[in-house]
Image 1: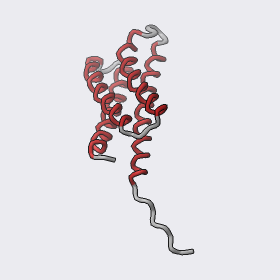
Image 2 (image 1 turned 60 degrees about the horizontal axis):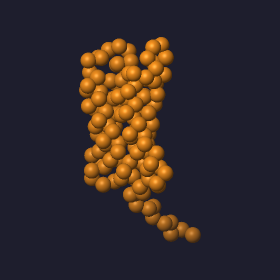
Image 3 (image 1 turned 180 degrees about the horizontal axis):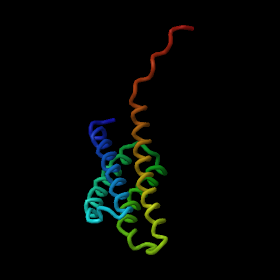
Image 4 (image 1 turned 90 degrees about the horizontal axis):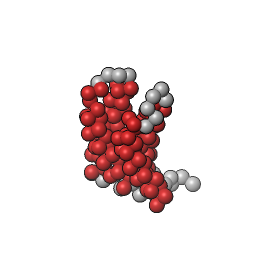
Length: 128
């Protein structure tokens, strides 16, 4: 992985964990005054996500799906308080959480693949 990716990946992970913790606090009715922090960290999350997937050597289909997820996640996050308001709103919250977890999984998978591609090939055995 290049130097910027080595910096962006831990930053992405930290912002992702922060988002999940803040989201769970909101879900339990605590720290509701920190929604702007959640949105700001979410912006960092999406920016680092889009950087990570854009440098990840995905095929055209994989890159399209990854970028689509990167666009849908913040739009859904900004709109989710207005979707399915009432007793079924928890389904929207779960969907928002799952989209965030999917984004974290995409980045971790591509980072793992890139680390594997950058690793030197094992030495060939001389024993026949």
